[in-house]
Image (cartoon, rainbow over all chains, first blue to last red; front, top):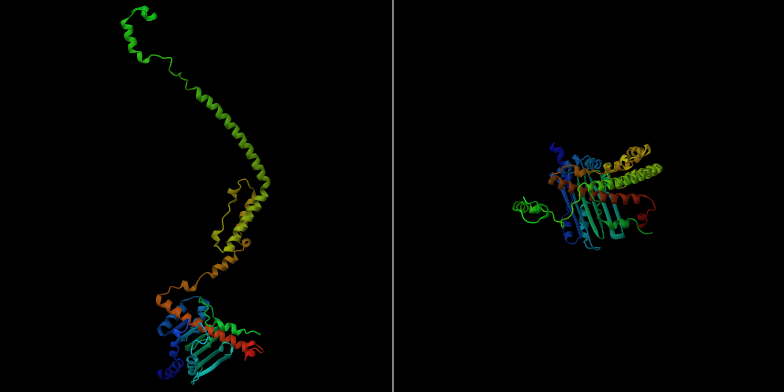
Length: 179
Length: 196
């Protein structure tokens, strides 16, 4: 049993990104969000979701039933180019290692926006997701370990009694460029 | 006894003088106030009061006749006023989304005692659920419960839940941005396509 599970567990651990490089941004950023949820705390949160009778909570519970950990770093800066782009490039370089597959890659010259979505699979099962979004005034990295329903999570944006957090407000303007 | 002293007060009689001195305290003086018989006052008062009551009763009866006849002719107007008040009350409940208990019960029997069946119809109007349309109130009651607040959580559970929800909300917002961006790229001649 252990022999069967061991490779999968090893791959799942491989899906974890090293985000230490971003720690230096905390002092420069205006707003900082850092969330690490794994192990017992994640189990506790899953149990809370299971207790609820809300339909959206049930959906989320299904979407994250196999989730093992989730790490989030989000930084908002007062002015443009306040952070060193090499810090975020170092995160992106981790996604070039074997195992990661590019799902989406968007580059826009406006605001120097870069969006990367990578996934890692173990056989047919998703073992990790990485989302890296950066522009001139903000950086956000999401690292999910374990299978997760991406489409469902995208649908649930702004629901579940959570305030809709949009870290990169300026990007919304860039999505509708002037003619 | 000396009769001259008794009738003309001439001469002297020690016995009569002694009696006079003994009864001196009860002697009549002309300077004292004349006493009016007590029974004369109430008979006069009684007479005036009964006249006043008679006049008052007449005025009251005349007023009552005028008011009642006026009310009889004004009955349709009162009926519509009560209906309006009922509709306003229901509207207020719907507008402010108050619970149904806030609808005031308008008792037509106390408002116009002499009103006829029309006024009772107004009461029926208030209580007919089909006519007052309370559907919006019901919809509001449905949206009120907060599932998160209904579940009793320990401090650890709440913290874990909040952390997970924060992480998921950021993740979902980022994924939505990616999804929207990719869907825009897929469409031909979109603004993003032109930027590329």
